[in-house]
Image (cartoon, rainbow, N blue to C red; front, side, top):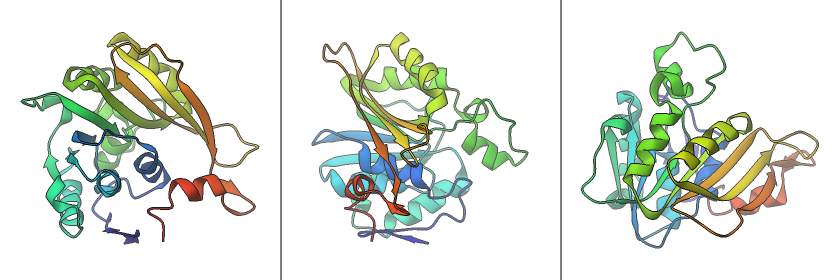
Length: 231
């Protein structure tokens, strides 16, 4: 079990456990003051819970295709102060429809398309977007569902950025913010946090970087980013 300041998370039923990527996206993502946000590939519900803590007037739908993970996400949500604003769905994002446009979509999507698939179906589905959620289909569906100026925010391996960015451009999603994530200062970025808006944006995207570790512990910037969550 992982304890945060305002909630706890169980992840033993989930193929992909609580990790730095999910925490980073949950702490970094910036949402409007109100509306509807879908968390795609929600796993144990971590990102939805982190965002519900910060954005008190937003409503969240945590979408998870794997049934055991969805059950655990629902259990995690029910034991928090945010349960009235988070709905967990065991469903395929690509098959879902919605009566109105969605304000925001966040996702720590399956990736590692360039590596061999895990022989374990559940883990392969969680890790490989070719197995469960191909990037082209994910991006196209997100663009269809988002309202004008709605936001898509993801965390990806740095190696996937160009492909994902090009796909977003093709469907009218414009990059507005990017944070490269380095484990330590002397190593190249391994992850990248990206925020897109639906429609044209005239401003130059905001770009910065985050270094996670410094002097054997969390860097001041990482500590500040996650201050509302980490004990």
